[in-house]
Length: 421
Image (tube, rainbow, N blue to C red; front, side, top):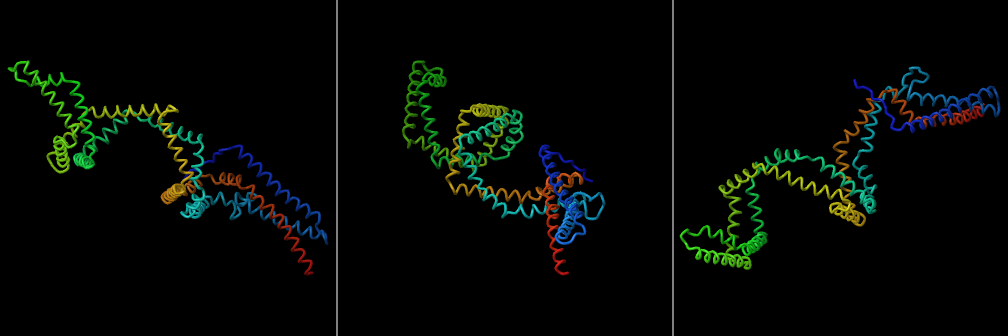
């Protein structure tokens, strides 16, 4: 059996004001009943005009008492008597909760209603007007920056290590990389993207050869025969260095050089082998696995993350930092588009409606079930008291209207009786 959950007033001051208002209206309704009773007693047995007054007072008492009974029967047994079909809310709160759940689901959580309400709300236009104020745009950027900074601070080195070791590295081991590298290389060559890299390498190589002739001479001298005279070795290595510089310069300056064509042919063959040659693919995969098994992979990933986090955190902490300024620029540009682009606003409003409809269709039943589950946990007596506190003041108008309308009907009935006699 579910245990009852007590109410917790979120605003005692508001409850006190409601209780005073309820008491005032009860006093008014009771005063009208007492007034009708006094008038009835004073005019009892009178004829003529006072007869009409007596009939009206009598009917007012009947209407007041009947409506008092009806209102009271919602929340408790009138006069404490266990009369059938009274104290409806304490006794039937669960049925009322299920009825309220069905009412909300059938009349509020419908696609047409949701789309109409979201469309009439013009959410995107309101957001655009709000973001169009610089202080509001700055506030959005500040909030996003604070949230991102807190999120970055929550990610620890062990989290990154676990992600790399447990998720990324095993996945990279399983995923063949050869076809990907081959297709990327083939696409790069098809778009002549590799030529820029070749030009860069040749330019750097030419500059290094010019600036490091001694290093080149030493390397070439180590390969010279031991019996060759040093003077001849020096002249030969110097000549080789000079020709090597000229050869690299020729390749760099001539886009149609045979060496470039040979390099293109070699790269094209490599791209094809990476995609189709089993031997090349196997060697590439073994190289990939050896690289992934290196401990330095984890350390490098953590170092990259730390560098990225420090850069982002530092920029986010600076109100005039590059990241915040870029975010502010984008937010302002988005606000300007929202205020000017009718098509964009229509698309965003449609997306908002679609998201709301999806959420209702997927989770609407769970949302309305909250009503039933919550009411089932309420204590019946306290639930009745709390509901009466919120709506009881308005219900007292039923008693007041019953007193007045009853009196008028009593006068009318008395008039008909006089006419018939």
